Image (cartoon, rainbow, N blue to C red; front, side, top):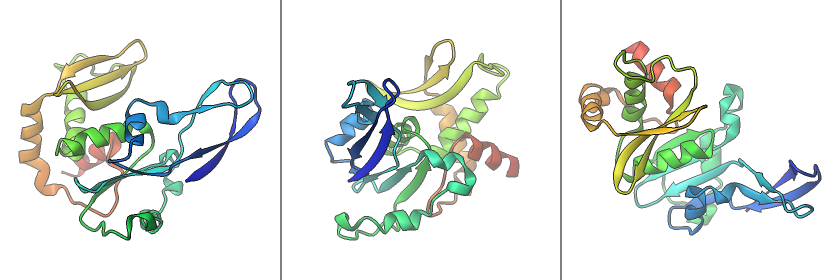
Length: 211
């Protein structure tokens, strides 16, 4: 467990919030991760709900993937040593993670996306490249849309979708499986799996610039 000190957005008083920083896929807390209630901290002074974004490690032993969520990863100089983070996992009887897919993300929206991707045995690299292709397509309505904030893969009712987050409202589209398969066929041989990686749109644009 970890403690963080917060200042209430409503009354400005400070308080401490205890949270679990290592969460397994079998943990009941997973549901709270996915429905966003994990990130709520109720101020004991005024009962206002504050949103937190603390560093956590999510681990799926069965599917062999691990995700570190840390908002400080948006700053290159603050990227933490993932090996140091793994060394703190004494509660897991020192299980080996050498063959795990290990990712870094900066927020919980990307954490939820990675969970959905890896639970469905898909490649996050291919999905980020797919987003690049769509966003750069002359035939796609979102090209050069300044109101677009982000794009996420998600699973809804057993169906694969892409959700486009915009300032003026969100919209969903069916996941373009044929394009995904084409990207996997063309590029998967170049996907090098390293110990820990931040795989996002920036990674995808850099990858394409080198191919």
